[in-house]
Image 1 (cartoon, rainbow, N blue to C red):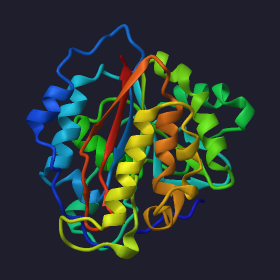
Image 2 (tube, rainbow, N blue to C red):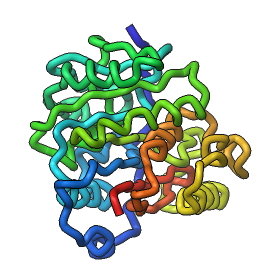
Image 3 (cartoon, one colour):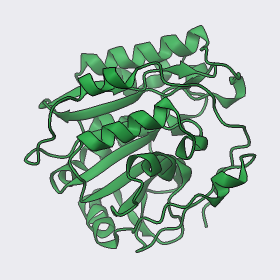
Length: 290
């Protein structure tokens, strides 16, 4: 049984500063059913984003309407760390409330999406050289359902998770992600769920950001836009302000999974590009065929 991570903090405040009209212009083309599935990195922030009405989850909801309907969704969540890489393989994953100090309404929230034992098995086979194991004990943690509840509220699309292996170096996790590309061709929407800047110890309760937090978010976006091999993003410890922005790696690593799936035929755009509460970046990344 894996130890679940409990977050004892109140809801992260703040609203996205990108307007929904700007969002609509960013994705004003019809989704192509012939293209491979897009890839997302979502800055998930507080689990309260699952049930509150705010610009962050309104943007997620609007984004989902522009995407091809997935055959299934696989999420790499910051909140599932294991020894070895695992994929949930149950037919009906439970909704995990892996936090504390939030209202009862959040603990009552359920996301009863089916799992996909078949795709979990296919994923493990696709990653045979990485010795990925099927898991029956986890479920859907809030890094997954707090994002999918606004995006796909009917909970009809099969959902499964992939864990973060605490033993793998960032470059290994990036390489593993590259081997997931076949899933994009099979209609699987892959989502990395975390935050580019995530430092709960330095959080403050307003909509402003520390200079170092805003600067780090800008640096990461600039390096993403440069493309190439993303070596500086993989070796994130060498980036200025990384010791404050990434005191622990679990919220940053899902970004590397999304970037590992990008090809030179893809374009990149950003959404919810806000750094708030002092030390939380809500910035999301959309990777899709150009």
